[in-house]
Length: 153
Image (tube, rainbow, N blue to C red; front, side, top):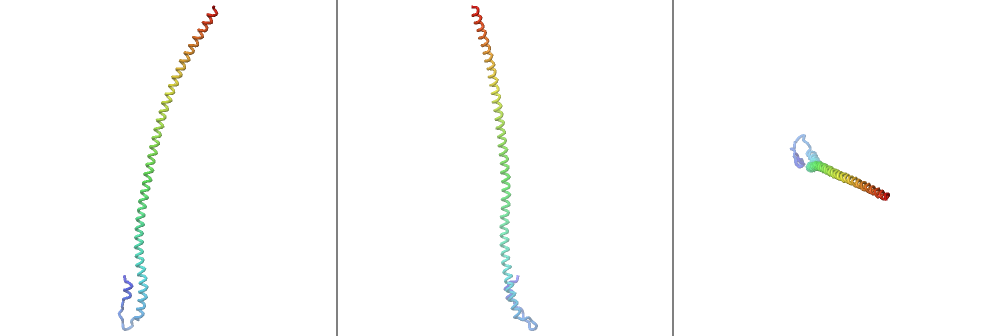
């Protein structure tokens, strides 16, 4: 690329006849040098800016990749946590069902035991009632005997 200094130092050979005015060419080259220098500086600044932006872009792409990886890990972790929670919930339900069955079985045993106790008490009551009835009958018979004996006397 031609630099502004190259333009400024450019010399043209002079012709004797029908040549360009040296002064006009020099003035034009001076103007061209100033404009080209501005353009050259702008181009250099823009190249520097492009390099900086590419570095920034690379930095942000790295951040984006990191964020995407973090998001994937967070999603994976969330799924794992949900799975663990689901398994724990299932375990809790199984334990509760087992405890409920055990309690039902124990209550069933207690009910059977109480029914047996009730039956035993009813049998004992029936035996007691029969004995009392027998006692009362024998006492009534005894009283009738005593009354008969007193009438006969």
